[in-house]
Image 1 (tube, rainbow, N blue to C red):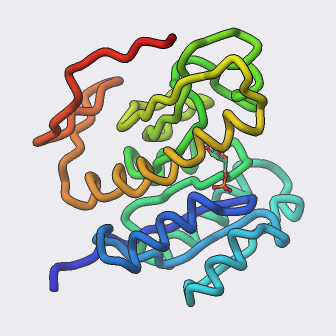
Image 2 (image 1 turned 90 degrees about the vertical axis):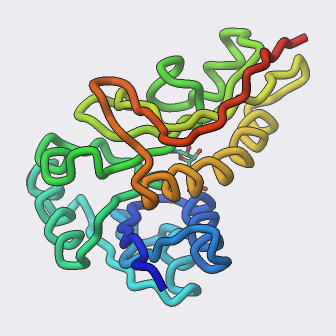
Length: 215
Ligand code: GRF
C-alpha cells in the first residue's frame, strides 16, 4: 500500500468539514490519515468527532498564552511532534501568525465560505446577501500571513436566490465545502499542486469550460 499523507487538523467549532475529511479517509477516496486534531476550544464538537474516529486529539487553549506567537509556537511544536506533512484549518477561529506560516510554507490549507477574494473575514454569507451577488461559494486556499489572502486551490460556486436567508445560503455553501476540501487535500497528496506566486497550477486538471448565468 502506498504511503498516506499525514494531516494535522485544527478546528474550533462543530467540525463538519473535519468530518467530511475523516469520512473520505475512511472510505479510501482520500489517501491520507489524520495524525492529530488540535483545538483551541475545549468544547469544540470537532474534538468529539475526532475521538469517535479514534484520532488523537489535543486541546491547546489560547487563553493560557501571553500572545499569539507563543500560542502558535505551542501548536507548531505539537504538529511537528505528530510528524504531519499538511495542516488543514477546518473552522479554526484564530488568526495564525507569521511564526506558524513560516514553519509550514505552502503546507497549510484553509476553507472559506465565499468566493475569495470577495468577502474575506467573518459573517461572509450575510455580506454576500447584503451585497446582492448572484453567485457565492467556497474557496480552499493555501494560508499566507494575510486573512484569507493565500493562493487559491479550488473554488465551488453556488447560486444566491432571492429568498435566501443567511442560514439557507450557508447550508448550500457548506455542502460544497465538504466536497472541495477533501478534493484539494487529495490533489496535494498526489503532488499535483504547484504554487507560482499567487497562482496554484493543478496538474492534469479538467476544469469546466462553460459559463454559469443567474438568473
Ligand atoms: C465553515 O463555513 C468554514 O468555511 C469556515 O468555518 C466553518 C466551519 O464549519 N472556515 P465546520 O466547523 O467545519 O462545520
